Length: 344
Image 1: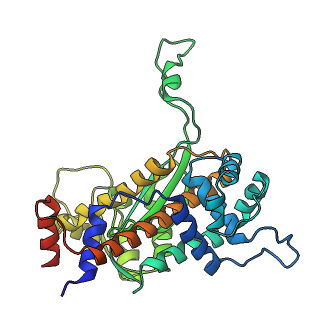
Image 2 (image 1 turned 90 degrees about the horizontal axis):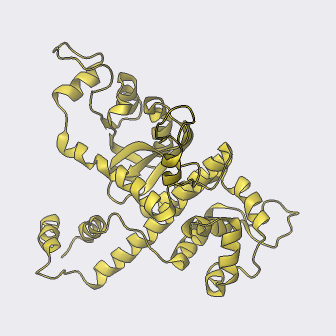
């Protein structure tokens, strides 16, 4: 008898950098999550033209189609079948969506929606391996070619800097399925070492984590102590923070010294999964934000995280049902041998 959990994990790993491309499936998944998390209306005296779950799906589709508020209104007007998937009878005005984003994407509501997406996939409320990292996003759609063509009036130099500060997104993801467990939106450049505890705390509130992987930007004795002693999570962070030295004197902190002497390179090799998540977000939803102000940019980044999770959920279900229907892969496939190894 086959172990379907192993089959499911193997199929996820074989398609690990992909998400569903169907807007209808994303809308259906978002509708199910939103109805279980959000109230139907904001208050008892609301106009009741649209429910909050319906407005949330419109915002998700805005990110999915990589468009703005006016653009998603036009797309929904031309897609009656898509509107039927979440019971939308009348198309909202673009200003309605803009106002709804302030309510539906505030920190508390967005975190509840993120927890609902995690709970829909992780049933036992525990994962073996997670990774943390941060990335920067573009704050405008200015052409890089135009930026390089700009020359200084006083000096004959090429210009290659667009701006000095940018929107920054820090996440923790499940290394087995690329599901985002927590997200912190700030503005960079800023050190990663100060955001470790806050990001990990949000993830631990949703699931139990056995091991957490991080790059040298998060290396500190305090972060190790918080993960290992407070949250009971094994942290694997290379001890490379600070000025490099050729001496063999012990590092400050017992956990940093432990990382230098007994570093688990094999497990740490899975840290690149969080880099894949950033690549998925930027390839599928764009690397530039349309919002111009700080809080609007934070809401847009959280919406990108939620849309990513919803698309990952749909692909995970698709691969699972495909595994039930066709449990054997072609013998001449290279993945077949790895498939057999995973099952044994």
